[in-house]
Image (tube, rainbow, N blue to C red; front, side, top):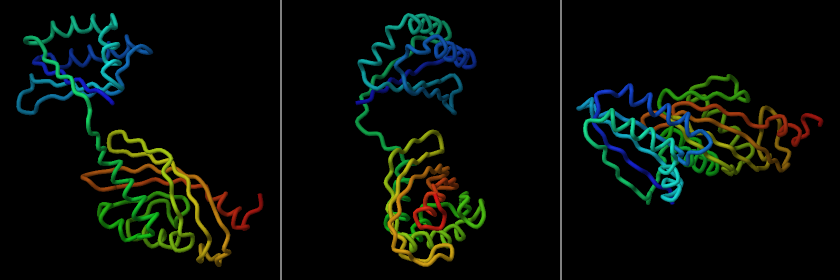
Amino acid sequence: MSFVQVIDLKTDRVDELRGLMDQWIEATEGKRTATHSIVGRDRSDSTHVVEIVEFPSYEEAMKNSNLPETNRIYEQLMALCDGEPSFTDLDVVGDQQLNKLMVQRFVDDVINAGNVDAADSLCSADYREHDPSLSSYDVDLETAKAENREIMEGFRPTCTIESLVAEGDLVCLRMTFTGRHVGTYHGLEATGRDVAGTGHATFRCKDGKIAESWWNVDDLGLMRQLGVVEG
Protein backbone atom coordinates (compact mmCIF):
# COMPACT_ATOMS: atom_id res chain seq x y z
CA MET A 1 0.00 0.00 0.00
CA SER A 2 1.37 3.42 -0.91
CA PHE A 3 1.60 6.19 1.64
CA VAL A 4 1.14 9.98 1.33
CA GLN A 5 2.33 12.70 3.67
CA VAL A 6 0.63 16.10 3.50
CA ILE A 7 2.65 19.06 4.87
CA ASP A 8 0.58 22.18 5.56
CA LEU A 9 2.45 25.41 6.29
CA LYS A 10 2.32 29.21 6.20
CA THR A 11 5.10 31.30 4.65
CA ASP A 12 5.51 34.47 2.61
CA ARG A 13 8.85 33.15 1.28
CA VAL A 14 7.50 30.67 -1.25
CA ASP A 15 10.34 31.09 -3.74
CA GLU A 16 12.88 30.30 -1.02
CA LEU A 17 10.78 27.31 -0.02
CA ARG A 18 10.84 25.97 -3.59
CA GLY A 19 14.60 26.49 -3.69
CA LEU A 20 14.92 24.55 -0.46
CA MET A 21 12.94 21.65 -1.95
CA ASP A 22 15.26 21.65 -4.97
CA GLN A 23 18.24 21.46 -2.60
CA TRP A 24 16.68 18.50 -0.82
CA ILE A 25 16.09 16.67 -4.11
CA GLU A 26 19.72 17.17 -5.09
CA ALA A 27 21.09 16.26 -1.66
CA THR A 28 19.08 13.03 -1.40
CA GLU A 29 19.78 11.74 -4.91
CA GLY A 30 20.10 7.95 -4.72
CA LYS A 31 18.95 7.90 -1.09
CA ARG A 32 15.41 9.24 -0.89
CA THR A 33 12.43 6.90 -0.94
CA ALA A 34 9.86 9.51 -2.01
CA THR A 35 8.44 8.81 -5.46
CA HIS A 36 6.35 11.94 -6.14
CA SER A 37 6.11 15.45 -4.72
CA ILE A 38 3.62 18.24 -5.44
CA VAL A 39 3.78 21.76 -3.96
CA GLY A 40 0.65 23.89 -4.18
CA ARG A 41 -0.20 27.43 -3.10
CA ASP A 42 -3.65 28.48 -1.92
CA ARG A 43 -5.31 30.83 -4.44
CA SER A 44 -7.17 32.65 -1.67
CA ASP A 45 -4.12 32.98 0.62
CA SER A 46 -0.70 33.23 -1.05
CA THR A 47 1.07 32.43 2.24
CA HIS A 48 -0.73 29.07 2.61
CA VAL A 49 1.33 26.28 1.03
CA VAL A 50 0.67 22.55 0.91
CA GLU A 51 3.19 19.90 -0.09
CA ILE A 52 2.06 16.35 -0.89
CA VAL A 53 4.76 13.66 -0.91
CA GLU A 54 4.14 10.07 -1.99
CA PHE A 55 6.06 6.99 -0.81
CA PRO A 56 5.76 3.27 -1.59
CA SER A 57 4.85 2.60 2.06
CA TYR A 58 4.88 4.10 5.56
CA GLU A 59 8.09 2.22 6.33
CA GLU A 60 9.82 3.77 3.30
CA ALA A 61 8.59 7.20 4.40
CA MET A 62 10.22 6.70 7.80
CA LYS A 63 13.50 5.79 6.12
CA ASN A 64 13.25 9.05 4.20
CA SER A 65 12.54 11.03 7.39
CA ASN A 66 15.64 9.57 9.05
CA LEU A 67 18.01 10.78 6.34
CA PRO A 68 20.41 13.43 7.72
CA GLU A 69 19.71 15.54 4.64
CA THR A 70 15.98 15.50 5.42
CA ASN A 71 16.60 16.64 9.00
CA ARG A 72 18.88 19.45 7.84
CA ILE A 73 16.40 20.70 5.24
CA TYR A 74 13.57 20.50 7.78
CA GLU A 75 15.42 22.82 10.14
CA GLN A 76 15.85 25.31 7.30
CA LEU A 77 12.18 24.87 6.39
CA MET A 78 11.14 25.80 9.92
CA ALA A 79 13.05 29.07 9.60
CA LEU A 80 10.94 30.00 6.55
CA CYS A 81 7.57 29.23 8.13
CA ASP A 82 5.17 31.29 10.20
CA GLY A 83 4.67 28.78 12.95
CA GLU A 84 5.19 25.04 12.88
CA PRO A 85 4.00 23.05 9.83
CA SER A 86 1.35 20.38 10.33
CA PHE A 87 1.82 16.84 9.00
CA THR A 88 -0.95 14.46 7.98
CA ASP A 89 -0.03 10.82 7.30
CA LEU A 90 -2.34 8.99 4.88
CA ASP A 91 -2.46 5.34 3.86
CA VAL A 92 -3.74 5.36 0.28
CA VAL A 93 -6.92 3.27 0.03
CA GLY A 94 -7.95 4.43 -3.47
CA ASP A 95 -5.98 5.76 -6.42
CA GLN A 96 -8.01 6.25 -9.59
CA GLN A 97 -5.90 7.93 -12.26
CA LEU A 98 -8.70 9.22 -14.45
CA ASN A 99 -6.66 9.87 -17.58
CA LYS A 100 -5.41 6.28 -17.52
CA LEU A 101 -8.96 5.01 -17.11
CA MET A 102 -10.01 7.04 -20.15
CA VAL A 103 -7.25 5.52 -22.29
CA GLN A 104 -8.20 2.07 -20.99
CA ARG A 105 -11.77 2.74 -22.15
CA PHE A 106 -10.49 3.84 -25.57
CA VAL A 107 -8.64 0.55 -25.98
CA ASP A 108 -11.58 -1.52 -24.71
CA ASP A 109 -14.37 0.25 -26.60
CA VAL A 110 -12.79 1.51 -29.81
CA ILE A 111 -10.20 -1.19 -30.52
CA ASN A 112 -11.22 -4.38 -28.76
CA ALA A 113 -14.97 -3.91 -29.21
CA GLY A 114 -14.42 -2.57 -32.73
CA ASN A 115 -16.73 0.39 -32.04
CA VAL A 116 -15.02 3.30 -33.78
CA ASP A 117 -17.94 5.62 -33.00
CA ALA A 118 -17.19 5.24 -29.27
CA ALA A 119 -14.40 7.75 -29.90
CA ASP A 120 -17.07 10.48 -30.13
CA SER A 121 -17.66 10.37 -26.37
CA LEU A 122 -14.01 9.81 -25.45
CA CYS A 123 -12.29 12.39 -27.67
CA SER A 124 -12.64 16.16 -27.81
CA ALA A 125 -14.28 17.88 -30.78
CA ASP A 126 -10.90 19.30 -31.86
CA TYR A 127 -9.09 15.95 -31.41
CA ARG A 128 -5.98 15.40 -33.55
CA GLU A 129 -4.41 12.03 -34.34
CA HIS A 130 -0.83 11.53 -35.50
CA ASP A 131 -0.01 8.20 -37.14
CA PRO A 132 2.41 7.57 -40.03
CA SER A 133 0.17 4.73 -41.27
CA LEU A 134 -2.77 7.08 -41.95
CA SER A 135 -3.26 9.25 -45.05
CA SER A 136 -1.76 12.21 -43.19
CA TYR A 137 0.29 12.43 -40.02
CA ASP A 138 -2.18 14.98 -38.62
CA VAL A 139 -5.89 14.12 -38.99
CA ASP A 140 -9.07 15.22 -37.25
CA LEU A 141 -11.52 12.97 -35.41
CA GLU A 142 -13.78 12.17 -38.35
CA THR A 143 -10.86 11.31 -40.64
CA ALA A 144 -9.24 9.20 -37.92
CA LYS A 145 -12.51 7.30 -37.39
CA ALA A 146 -12.96 6.62 -41.10
CA GLU A 147 -9.42 5.34 -41.57
CA ASN A 148 -9.35 3.38 -38.33
CA ARG A 149 -12.66 1.74 -39.25
CA GLU A 150 -10.84 0.12 -42.18
CA ILE A 151 -8.28 -1.27 -39.73
CA MET A 152 -10.96 -2.55 -37.33
CA GLU A 153 -12.96 -4.20 -40.11
CA GLY A 154 -9.87 -5.48 -41.89
CA PHE A 155 -8.24 -7.20 -38.91
CA ARG A 156 -10.71 -7.29 -35.97
CA PRO A 157 -7.73 -6.70 -33.68
CA THR A 158 -7.42 -7.41 -29.99
CA CYS A 159 -5.11 -5.06 -28.12
CA THR A 160 -3.43 -6.05 -24.87
CA ILE A 161 -2.10 -3.24 -22.69
CA GLU A 162 1.35 -4.25 -21.51
CA SER A 163 1.98 -1.02 -19.59
CA LEU A 164 0.22 2.28 -19.05
CA VAL A 165 2.05 5.25 -17.55
CA ALA A 166 0.59 8.68 -16.78
CA GLU A 167 2.36 11.95 -16.10
CA GLY A 168 0.64 15.32 -16.14
CA ASP A 169 -1.83 15.39 -19.04
CA LEU A 170 -0.03 12.59 -20.93
CA VAL A 171 -0.67 8.84 -20.87
CA CYS A 172 1.79 6.47 -22.57
CA LEU A 173 0.63 3.05 -23.74
CA ARG A 174 2.77 0.02 -24.61
CA MET A 175 0.74 -2.67 -26.31
CA THR A 176 0.70 -5.95 -28.20
CA PHE A 177 -2.01 -6.89 -30.66
CA THR A 178 -3.35 -9.91 -32.51
CA GLY A 179 -5.85 -10.21 -35.35
CA ARG A 180 -6.74 -11.88 -38.62
CA HIS A 181 -6.79 -10.29 -42.06
CA VAL A 182 -10.50 -10.70 -42.88
CA GLY A 183 -11.19 -7.52 -44.86
CA THR A 184 -9.66 -5.22 -47.44
CA TYR A 185 -6.81 -3.11 -46.08
CA HIS A 186 -5.06 -0.46 -48.20
CA GLY A 187 -6.37 -2.18 -51.31
CA LEU A 188 -5.15 -5.63 -50.24
CA GLU A 189 -7.93 -8.22 -50.31
CA ALA A 190 -8.37 -10.41 -47.23
CA THR A 191 -5.74 -13.15 -46.94
CA GLY A 192 -7.14 -14.89 -43.86
CA ARG A 193 -3.69 -14.73 -42.26
CA ASP A 194 -3.23 -14.31 -38.52
CA VAL A 195 -1.19 -11.26 -37.54
CA ALA A 196 0.47 -10.06 -34.35
CA GLY A 197 2.62 -7.11 -33.43
CA THR A 198 3.61 -4.40 -30.99
CA GLY A 199 3.10 -0.69 -30.70
CA HIS A 200 3.29 2.43 -28.59
CA ALA A 201 0.90 5.35 -28.28
CA THR A 202 0.89 8.59 -26.33
CA PHE A 203 -2.36 10.38 -25.47
CA ARG A 204 -2.82 13.99 -24.37
CA CYS A 205 -5.87 14.53 -22.21
CA LYS A 206 -7.72 17.78 -21.57
CA ASP A 207 -10.93 18.55 -19.68
CA GLY A 208 -11.86 14.90 -19.28
CA LYS A 209 -11.37 14.00 -22.95
CA ILE A 210 -8.59 12.68 -25.18
CA ALA A 211 -7.43 15.73 -27.14
CA GLU A 212 -4.51 14.30 -29.13
CA SER A 213 -2.70 11.04 -29.78
CA TRP A 214 0.52 9.82 -31.39
CA TRP A 215 0.80 6.22 -32.64
CA ASN A 216 3.72 4.01 -33.67
CA VAL A 217 2.84 0.45 -34.68
CA ASP A 218 5.04 -2.18 -36.35
CA ASP A 219 3.50 -1.71 -39.81
CA LEU A 220 6.53 -3.23 -41.55
CA GLY A 221 6.13 -6.41 -39.51
CA LEU A 222 2.42 -6.44 -40.37
CA MET A 223 3.15 -6.18 -44.12
CA ARG A 224 5.65 -9.03 -43.84
CA GLN A 225 3.06 -11.23 -42.17
CA LEU A 226 0.63 -10.46 -44.99
CA GLY A 227 3.24 -11.41 -47.57
CA VAL A 228 3.39 -7.91 -49.07
CA VAL A 229 7.01 -7.35 -48.02
CA GLU A 230 9.68 -10.00 -47.95
CA GLY A 231 11.77 -10.35 -44.87
